[in-house]
Image 1 (cartoon, rainbow, N blue to C red):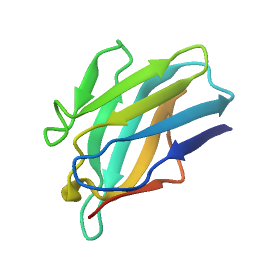
Image 2: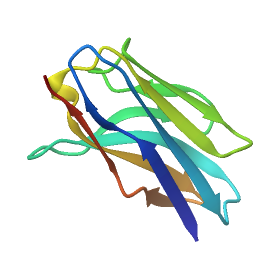
Image 3: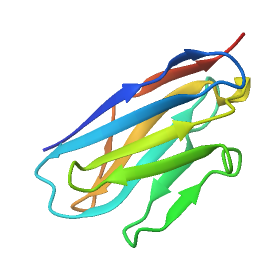
Image 4: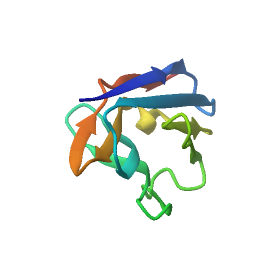
Length: 115
């Protein structure tokens, strides 16, 4: 069984910054992808940033140049640094891990960008 524990998020003013982290634990033999998605009310879940199995990084178009994903392989943790936040970044952010060919999701953490 795999567990994802997310932390971070909260309320920030436009132009501000927040960081998220996601730590994976459990019976993980191989990691295929690990990263972040988000879902705003009434919208589909969308990619934010993701490490692929080969180590390359994919960013959603709307966050390129503002968000940065990093990882600590020893801790099986990914981090998301979000800068220059906009009201349209408001969403529930979900950590995603494909490990042992199984898709796992975190419980989600709310990010609200508002003045």
